[in-house]
Image 1 (cartoon, rainbow over the protein chains, first blue to last red):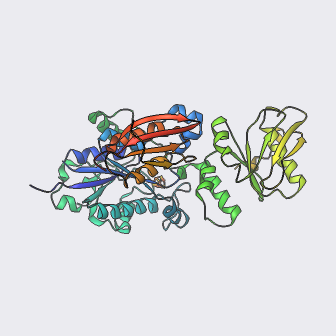
Image 2: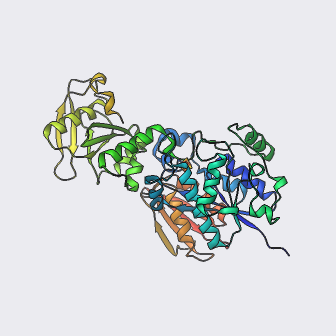
Image 3: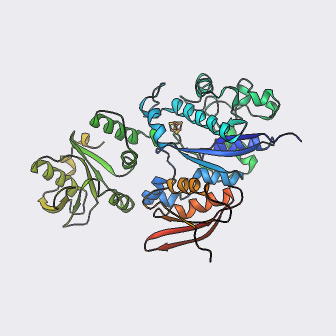
Length: 348
Length: 79
Ligand code: SF4
């Protein structure tokens, strides 16, 4: 009996990897999925934090895709290792702080390690030539093949007919003729194939699979790096960039203002790590302070910002409680800033 | 009811971290072992069962005790 050929698929939770897996299953390949958690994934976290997202979607898309396909999914924590990818991307960043090309290379390299350890035969991804400006061009897709060390073991079933034959094709494990020749930005071929396979209700992320493609998230990340003077980061730092309005009245500190209940609840967990404020005379959000407030004037200014986001924003006076990490809470009565008094540059 | 052999505490962590920790911990267990996972992110009530379904484990119960979500699972044969 011939040996069962096994491949691992990079599963992001989107439609393309789902189609790629199904196409390979049709060729009798045993597939398992692998999903890398970098800390920036749109999955999970934020759904739990923000109520509005929670209504929209509770499921983890990667798990959902695996279940639809009937495959196992291995979720791998790469938070630590990913730092080097984001901090020093050899090929730079995309439109925002997304290091897509280095990221893809990193993931394929990790998948190579995985197939060696688990005795799988090759790797598949849902990439399509020309689909994305940075990481899915014919030349850059070749860079991933080379720099990841995957060589002929990386198969992209959705556009394989437009690429050079890979080892599994040459060995006859899979039939090149039965693979696809998608190319370009159009999503129509994928949608048509999804229909053919009977897939409905799949996720179609617009920009990419992570927060680094998001403009406002990227701005906050750059601000963090500028202020601290280096690019190192901790998991909590990047988590907090996902929540709240970030307001920086001074290079010395920023205020993170909860936008709704879910965020306030999430931020409460950080009260033992940051100074924090809340409106005590009126209802209002929790506000974390990241940095240093050195003078009573700094504290007063911060309190006026805090008051601006409470329900007392139109009142003459609002009492705000400031709780420093070290020292006793203090009450400050201030006049809230008006919208016009808050310079636009303060909003990160 | 079976008593949990092991307890995994992932309180304070948001998904997918509870799922990742459960997955990694499950590798050390044998088929039939009962694992109790203590969580605070409500996302686990859909993610851990989904993870169990695709990996051949079963969810025995999901209950909330003093604000802590306790997901009890039984390890399947395939892990
Ligand atoms: S969108 Fe994010 S996760 Fe996807 S390839 Fe780019 S950097 Fe990596």
